[in-house]
View 1 (spheres, rainbow, N blue to C red):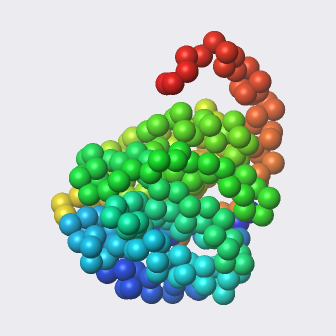
View 2: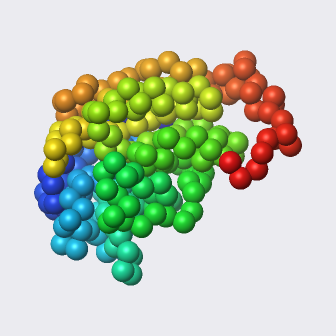
Length: 265
């Protein structure tokens, strides 16, 4: 499966301007590289303009769902739709949407772990369903949002259910760049899966974001890594047979003894 990953800067609080930016990027990228799947970062429609959610958040996923569905169908490409601020009834969520080539919504997820360092718990409501496996073109996959990366238990569950690729969409700050890079490598190694991440660049409200979007193989080797400050696209073809190979060479899942593990951790 061939990927194009968008490491972008975001216009704060300007959803329509960001949608046009993504549309133009996706059109250029499909024409140039013909990817199977494109990936966007976290909160790409608004950035972290949490004080202004009433003016700029989606409502029940719209207009982002319609925008991404139409774009996927028009370009014949799968879209890992990053995440957006999303109002449902009276609460605001950090929501992700995934569409296949026909424009069908195949998965959606509300961020469970809200990051206190960026004030999310003050403005957002955490999702009530942990990440689950979904499929694109017969490949089992997972998706987490930013701070979820620090909670390996939800990622291990995805691996146990057969996920071969984990997507991470993020606005990860440069103050914790080392954590961002090293935790992704650790998750790839311990779960023997590909990690495909899209992180934003730029600055908002005194916080600079660290880029370093990544593709890591199931052995823990970094295949692609973005810069810290530049908008760019990471393009790569994943060899999914590598997942089977690594899991056969180092059979950690067969070596597990879950009846000895404490529950509820």
